[in-house]
Image (cartoon, helix red, strand yellow):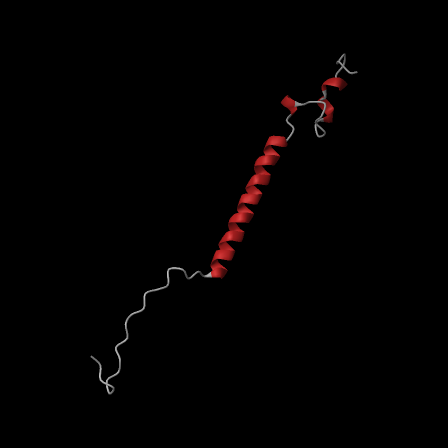
Length: 76
C-alpha cells in the first residue's frame, strides 16, 4: 500500500487494440485502389483489343482486313 509520501508506481499501459493510424490506412487504401484500378483497365484492354486473326466487321482498328472488304467477300 502506498503512503502519501511515496510516489505511486506506474502500471505499464497496454496499447489500445482499436487505435488506428489513419494516415497509413488512407495511404495503403489509395495505393491498393490505384493498383487494382490500373490492373482492371489493363485486363479489359487486353480482352477488347482487336487482333488481326480475330477481325470482325465491328472492329474499328483492323480496317485493312475486314471480311466485307476482301475481294469477293460477302459484303451486303
